[in-house]
Amino acid sequence: MSDSGFKSVRDADEEEFSWARPEGETVATGWSDEAYPNELQEIRTRVHRRLLDRLNLSNLSERDQEEAENEVRKIVRDLLASEETPLNLEEREMLVEQVINEVFGLGPLEPLIKDPRISDILVNSFNHVYVEIDGRLHETDVRFRDNRHLMQVLDRIVSAVGRRIDDSSPMVDARLSDGSRVNAIIPPLAVDGPHMSIRKFRRDVLSDEDFLRNESMTEEMLELLQGVVRARLNILITGGTGSGKTTLLNVLSESIPHSERVVTIEDSAELQLRQPHVVRLETRPPNIEGVGEVTQRRLVINALRMRPDRIIVGEVRGAEAIDMLQAMNTGHDGSLTTLHANTPRDALHRLETMVAMASLNLPEKGIRAQIASAIDVIVHVQRMSDGTRKILAISEVVGMEGEIITMQDLFLYHREGIDADGNVEGHFAATGIRPKAAERLLEYGINLDETLFSNLGLATVVR
Image (cartoon, rainbow, N blue to C red; front, side, top):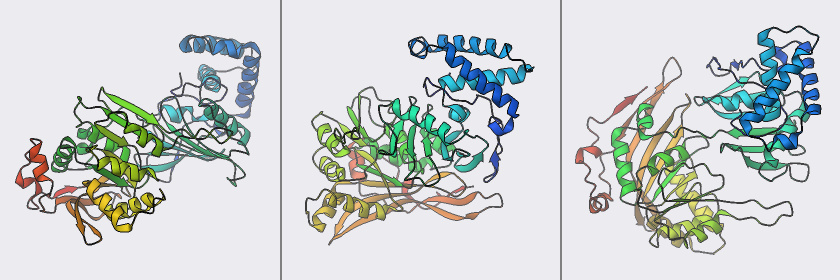
């Protein structure tokens, strides 16, 4: 059964893939129309049409999912048995699975949705589909029949969440039933036909041990960050698209005590907090008439009335920045959020811009004072050229000097080059600076060893 949980009509199949990994090479799934003779494609189309004639789709949607799938599978096998063209067992089972995915899944995308190694699926056109595996993009041999086929899949995805995509609304954000994010854009805005991107939702949440195993940080960095969370310091996680900001936020949230009430606010619910007392809020786009929108700013304001111990904003991107900063400055410490930025310093500039979007006409120095008072630690992450993710900097906001926000780096990643296999080489190192927040950590019973911040002997080579 499809992870997506949609009941409708498409093709593809499930298979354990042994895919080549080198970037730029085509990923062979073995399930494109081009991989099979026209005769098999005609049989599949014919069987699919005959199946629709025999099925009561409205009645099928009311049945238990597994029971309905088994019933359809039996009907498809019967229909294939009545075909005049002789089929071997492998061909027969392949066609059964493809038709099943037409009815219950997302068609040609179904094998990609089911493969746990894929993090992103990028549909550039009906005959060009790419995936991201281990941080690198690969072209696949997955194909839709035509643009109409692709549009049918898009219609099913967006209609399942009560939205639509057509000429009057050519852009849409949606979510699959497993939490995967979907963005689609169609003509006339997309020149070459419909485009779709799917950011898959991980079922297995990465842990701090995974970060250490993947050499995304060192044990000393992890110990500091865990202490910062427990001491209720406000943390801003920055980085580019796909750098792992939300994943790191999930990992850091594990240090939040289970006795605290946490309110999360997101555009698309992705956070997977393990605490028992969590309230999850999600924005709502305007409806077809253009009304009913609920923005992150309204949710942040509402969250303040919900007696939160901590507020976690999935990503700050607009006027809600001022309300978040004021919350951090008025007793809601220990908050965490993410923000797109190229460096920790750029993150502060972006925050200034977002506060200005609230049109409150605050003086520049006043905005910076709010930021310096609210944000305690900035963690900057980046996806490297070899696909790995690393924490490039852990920086502490110290305060103001004149009209400038001052920061100090506590840990840095020093990139040294690329080896013969294309892997990034470098090392993590402490800067030797003791954090200003060390006293706050002691107040919460967190006594970090002085050698933790020493730049002697700490350099950890990462290959």
